[in-house]
Amino acid sequence: MENSQTFGMTSAINTAPPKESDITLTKKLEEYLRECGMFETDAELHHRFEVLGKLNNLVKEWIKDISLNVKHMPPQVAETVGGKICTFGSFRLGVAGKGADIDALCVAPRHIDRSDYFTSFYELLKRQPEVSDMRAVEDAFVPVIKMKYEGIEIDMLFARLALKEVPDDVDLKDDKILKNLDEKCVRSLNGCRVTDEILRQVPNRETFKLALRAIKLWAKRYGVYSNVLGYLGGVSWAMLVARTCQLYPNAAASTIVEKLFLVFSRWSWPAPVYLKQPYDAKLLFKVWDPRLNIQDRFHLMPIITPAYPQQNSTFNISQSTKAVLVEAFHTSLETTQKIIAEKSSWEPLFTPPNFFSKYKHFLVVLASAKTSEDFLEWYGLVESRIRLLIVSLEYNHAIKTIHINPTSFTTQDEEYVNKPHAAWFIGIEFKKSENINIDLTNDINKFVEFVYVKSTYNKAYKDGMEVNCKYVKRKQLSQYLSQENLDRYRGSSRASSTSSHHQQPHQNQQQQQQQQQQQQQQQNEQEQTPHSNCFGVKRKSDACLPASPDTNDVEVYKKLRGEHGTQNELANGNEDETSTTSLSSNSCSTDLSSHPPRPSSVNSISQIPNINEDISSGVTQQAVQLSS
Image (tube, rainbow, N blue to C red; front, top):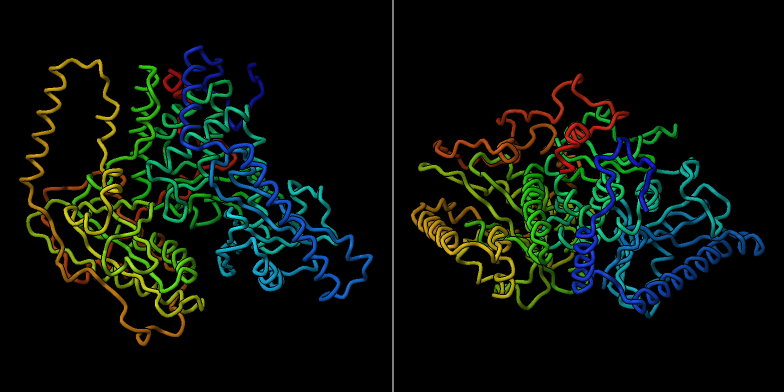
């Protein structure tokens, strides 16, 4: 049944219903996703609802107990104050796969404080036999308690409403619910409000859900699913799928997958992606608006949440991660178009790219701790700071490409095998130059020291927590990774993996000759290897650390990205590979006052787009071309 309602801020590109071939391809896509565990069984879903029911009862009992014994409310009043658990994210969207975590929100009445949540409720959870691996991240941008409940990973936020009572049918969609709340509560509530608004903005929910399952699997396999490391998180991918559904309201899920790659490979970033007309609820909360907020002008791939207060869900993206994402869109578009044209298997689209074969040089960030409990906290802290290292490295004129793999690995390094640890690999391509002196000591030192300073300041650091950076050549990877991991990420290139078996023999021979020539050329290239003493930075003691950080991580990130910015070569691809570069030992410092200012994404006030217009950057003008 065709959908004639208009969704989004522009008219649809193509409203044609799916063809029989589209329906067949969609069935194949769903079968493949089921084989990959992207659907839960009824038993697993039932277990999740049981867990949420137990947590909901626990919240109600806790709020009642605090009301009686701490706030000294009359028993008859304490019985009616309510409180509840709400879900958001993939579970709320209906796209949770096997083993997925649950994003939940504890909603409490006005007399319950956040301090109560992170003290008495935390202790209550700790006493539950079903709870394990629990930790509180109270100082996070969105404070959260992380845990496993009966084996299911749960991230639970907290929001206190300005209401005497919180009934089970409380309407979180109403903007008035935000009145008189602090920003942390508003950010916590935004998870539920955004998730529900996304579902309201899509023309066909079932098509949206199936396409989103496919895109989530693709993004994880391709290595572009991680908000914390500067790629896109779950809500951002959901919004891109939703926007594609708006532009092709009657298309099948297989078509939505293809058109997403088509639309966003041609999108004129940093033009923002909107699902609906932004509005001001007059509650004085800050919204994303590059006309008013200078820092918003530096966002590279803004995807704006549809619920008030509207925010950019992709503010972590850097020039490097943007380049990886744009390349992923282009490459996967070619792969998908080939699958659709040949009506073949979907497997090539979900084959991981050859990350470890693509680069000759790697930085390895290693985090370790003495105990598993300490490591859980240390892992998240180190991972959340790696993007600062990436942005710092982007200033180095000797570096052409930086590519962080969001998957963390356990290594075979003898130094780490007997303790909890994780390793992240950053692929680096240096510019070709005969006279080059590369020194990344300053970048690494500042990153390592900042991690320790931040953890010490937050009182999160414990004895035995370590972070280390090492330089590794491609041929040395086997010292760190198992052959299984190397083979998985060293698979054939996407071009070869999607080659048709109908190709003529002389075409295959020609490809083999080209590959041999490329291999010979790579062997003849002189490897640009940094000095060995530039890496392996490791903190020796706490004595050198200041008692408190000179600046917090948000300010550091603003300084790295806003005041000096990142090099445009990564996005524009206009490096002079034949130029001779000479870098002194101080040229990689994160104090980049000597570097030229970064051109902002929007160069002048006159170029700032009007957020009341859909900034689709020619999507509607190219409707005929895109719909073909």
